[in-house]
Length: 302
Ligand code: PLP
Image (cartoon, rainbow, N blue to C red; front, side):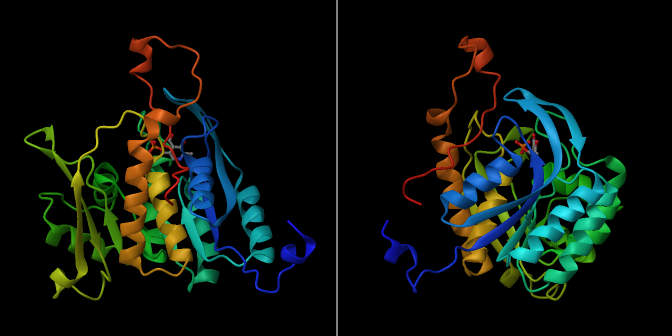
């Protein structure tokens, strides 16, 4: 690149997305999935780390939360220098971290923020301390622009908030999340079962403008339907989707469009994941079948 093009007066800063999440040494989830997604989609990722995990493609073995003062000073230091175009929150480890992030968000009310409420890893390890769920519900759910739970996470959140879960009707869920002060909700339906079997189609429901619109539901519920993908290498799916939504919002896209484009990106990243795995030590078919590697974030068409 010539010096002239390097200093071109038309050069525009990249949309800048802050992600607050845990470190996954296997590179599939957490901050690494966030950063890969955001950079693959042409934006710039900033990171604040909430925990160092010990894990590989078989699951999480240990979680070491970051000290609250360290999380706080990372956030403060980044805020002094960068203008955030979107903020994405993934794994938080404990009550104090939830409080710090909720306080931090109060200074960024005009910036789109997304909470992927990571509670337990797919391999079964607790990521957010159970006694912090209530704080997440009261402090953070109402503070963010969009919450993106999957079905087990939605179930745990509603239970912790004291809601009886008798059905999975859109109206009931809309009402219950409204009561929690949630502004917009993307309920990811990949775990849905019909007669105890995984359903053939996955439906994600996008509820918009929740607190205001209880009387006019149909205008505020969007459904994204797709064939359910049976993908072995799906580690970090939630991190990838929420980071892609954050990136499209950072570019200025409206919420529905951002979700739609992020879902298209995620589908490609999942479908091609198998072809982009690292060099694993054991090649035995039996061991191979138990792994859950990360996705293919670098999709050429995006
Ligand atoms: N964030 C971090 C730091 C993690 O370690 C994990 C899980 O291991 C996740 C998020 C959630 O990833 P997954 O949806 O694959 O369980």
